[in-house]
Image (cartoon, rainbow, N blue to C red; front, side, top):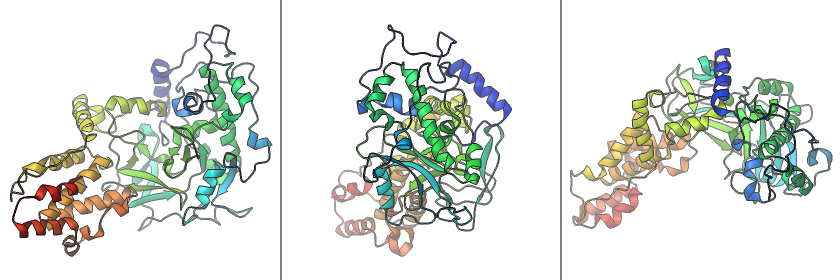
Length: 488
C-alpha cells in the first residue's frame, strides 16, 4: 500500500530501471502470450480453496515490467455474474455493489461531511457491517482540529506532515475509504466453466486474466463514486503500470490497506482469501517507515481507517506508517517493499547504514522472543532489581530503534508496570503506565489498561500494589507463586 510514492521523474526512472534489472518476469518470446502448448505444464485442481492463493490473490502476482502483461490471445473476457444477473439479497455468497453508509439518491459530499464508500462485498459481510453496534457512526475528529498537511516529500512524492506537536496516542485522522474491494478474485472461480477455461493457460496468463477481471470490478465501483472522489482516486499513484494491472486495480494494489480479518471477512474463507482492502484518499499519502511513528486500524462502526500516533511527533515531522512487518530483517523488509516501487529504503539509519542495519536486525530478531521474568527463588530481596533488568534493557532498545509500534513494546511496558506496582514505586508505575496507555489508545486496545494505573491514588487500588503490600506484611518467602502471573 504505497502512499503516493515515486511521482517524480527521477524516481519513476529509477523504478523502471530496478524493475528491468531485478523484478521482471521474463518470457522467451516478445509476442503476445497465447494459450499453453501441449508440452507446457497445466494448472490443475484450481477449484480447491487451498490452491487459489496463486491465481486469485494479487499480492502473490508479478510486479515491475512483466513481458507477459496483457490478456492471452484467444481469451474471451468473461462477464461478471453480478453485473449481468439479479442478485439474491439472501445469498451470503453473492457479491453486491453497495454504498456504505447508505446515502440518499442525488446526495453530495457537502450533504455528508464524513463521506461514503463504494463497496463490492459479499452478502455475509454486508450483514456483518449493518449489524455492527453503532454503525454508521460519524468519523472521529482530532482534538484541536486537523493536525497535518499533505505536501511534497521529495523523491517519495507526496507525504503527510505534522502541523503541530502530536502526542503519543493522539488521533491523527479517521477517514472513510473511497472504495472497499475484495483482495482476491474467488467469486469468479466458483464458476466451474470458468475454471475449465483457465486450465488452458499458464500460471502467469491466469494471473493476467485475474487482474483484468478484478480491474473491471473496481471500475464498476469507481463509476459509482461522486466526481470529486473519482478525481481523488485517479490522482493516487500507480506502481503497477507495467505488470498487466489496469489503471483501477493498479491503484488499489498500490494504495489499499488491508482490513483486519477479525472484523471483515467472507464466511468460510481461509488463508489470504476472503479478505478485503480499503483505498482512501488522504490516508494513501502516508509514506512508509521501518520505524513508523503512527499506526492504523479499521473501525466498522464508523466505517473508517483510523490513524494514531505511537510516539510524540513534533511539528514539521513526516507522519509515517508501516507497509511491512517492522520486526522483519532489513532484507525481508526490502523484499516486501519492492512491489511498491521502493527499491532502496533509507527511512532510517537502520536501513541505510550497513553496520547499524546489522545491529538492528539482531535486535529485531530478539524482540520476536518475549522475555520471561522470574523473581529470586526464596522470595523478594529489597533492592535486588537485577532479575528484571532484561525488561528495562529491552524497553531501552525498543525505544532506541523507535519501535513503539511493535507489540513487544506493549508487553514490556505491561511487565514493568506490574513490577513497580508490586514494589510500591508510584512514580515508575505512572511513567510506564502512561506510555502503555498511549500505545493502547493508538492501537485500538484501550480496554487493556486499568485506568487506576494512571493516577497516584488509583495505583494503590491495583492488584499488583495489594499483592506487594500483602507480601510485605507477611514478611516471608513465597513471592513466586503470587508474583509470576503478573509478569506474563
